[in-house]
Image (cartoon, rainbow, N blue to C red; front, side, top):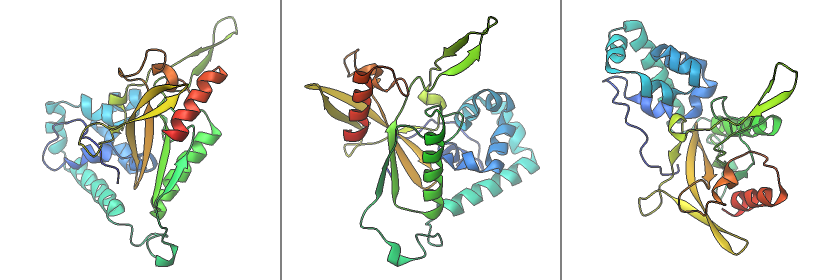
Length: 257
């Protein structure tokens, strides 16, 4: 496990405290029962954001009072949380854990320019990202010692549309990490972890975010931080950015950072 700073405090009622940890673990992204549970908490937030973080942020005390008084919801929540706890327990009965001869001397580092984990995490464009996301989910199911490493694209991948004249237009979404299942990695000093990379004789710094995919952490590097020169902050803004120099900067941050 990669140490992280605490996530948001959702002020959850007794019996539902586990929803906070579940919201920060993308196990829910391939577990329809978990998605349905979050949709029942706040259908509007789920429809708009497709993210449990947004759902828990927008559910107020009145809504929680309704849900804790709903026996069917509480039973369903207990079952989902129990299933999640069993999945995360130890992995002793998984493909990797059940065969000691498969033990590796250290973790597998899986570098990729994009990870397609869920539609709410728009840091992918297509086939490569979906494949990388599926590798992470499969590695989690097998309990492999596996760590993904990528970039946090603050503006994600553009959305295409056709205007009234038939011309293609595209818009870049502005991703807000506070609405996503991401937590800052914690350094050995207890502070938010940052790494630095030398790029053209200058230091470029990157914050490290953790996307937990079941048992598998993915470390996402983010240069859009105040410590960087304004010209360097956009390095991790756009997936497959135009311009060879900026693309090279992205590859340096990913490969060395």
